[in-house]
Image (cartoon, rainbow, N blue to C red; front, side, top):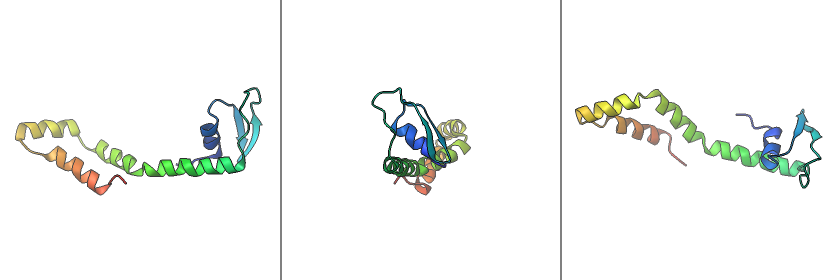
Length: 101
């Protein structure tokens, strides 16, 4: 995922309308009192924070993709009928392969 300057500005000022063109703020809704344009330093810090937050969830996105490939309802049903642990084993394997940091 590519986090943009527009994402950072929206995160810093979620209720303000603005436009960005080629990473430059070209329009800012001055009607919103108390909402000033963020500085370049504030935008860059927010970009770094957003990227770190996104990167920190990589394991969760990977796990979800792997979980979605399983037919979990069928696995749980078969485990109950057969007294097996196939579903739990599959989930444990995914968690072990993609550990939470």
